[in-house]
Image (cartoon, rainbow, N blue to C red; front, side, top):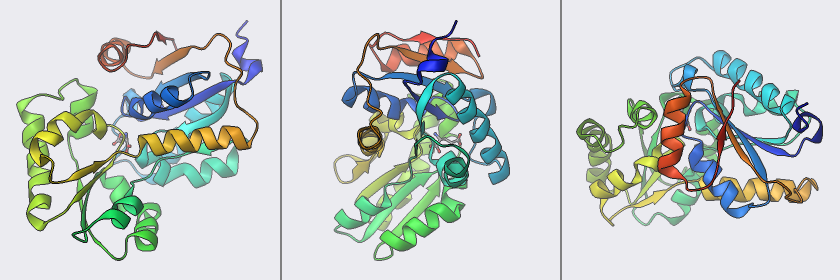
Amino acid sequence: MDETRFMKDLIGIFDSGLGGVSIWREIVNILPLESTLYFADSANCPYGQKSQDEIVDLSERITRYLAGKGAKIVVVACNTATTAAIGHLRSVFPFPIVGVEPAVKPAALSSRSGKIGLLATLGTIESPFYNSTRARYASDVEVIARPGFGLVEAVENNQIYSVETEALLRRYIEPMIETGVDKLVLGCTHYPFLIPVIKKIVGDKIDILDPAPAVARQCQHVLEETGLLSRGSNVRYEFLSSGDNEKLDIFLRNVTSLPFSIGEI
Ligand code: DGL
């Protein structure tokens, strides 16, 4: 019998694919007594150019699945799914849902040049959710937003250090540098895995903002507030993929030294 179904003591995390692992690693870093169940929807990746209805439908199905497997909270570790579906998820499910959105607010508050760059999926850049955040918190700065076509696929296919990926990043980021941005907001959870290559392009002229630590802190805060923190016996990290388990395994071995298991859906 799968006891987790009844114990409801897991942090459920999902993304369109592997990108949300950038959030998972911050969560387990600050919450070492919590067990996690991560769902990579790699069969449907990328989400960035799907319709809002489709993303809402996928997000609801995955959230329901995670809850059925024992999630007490679900972290939507995907900007595109957060901007498209978080309101819906919160209206449907009784447990806490934490999301991630582009960190334009801290970038705007700390920018000296008054210009910030945003690299995100087309879905996020065009979403009413992101545009209302931008209007509310970043109306005093110019936001140079660029959809990062091809970058999600580069991370999914283990092509982070390829010549093609660096060329794509240069095409998107160099025009931002020319306009004088001093902050670069990574508005997609896949992109933090590209930071070594991005640093090669921006040097130390531009600060790179990855929201993962803030999302992990928010998850901790919500668990504390709702009395859902775990006592931490038998901590485990399980990963599931709707796509290729071997790809998931190779990716995880490259990014974490923690023990993990890969389950079957
Ligand atoms: N990691 C997702 C995000 O944060 C990628 C979306 C996609 O699959 O296009 O937006």
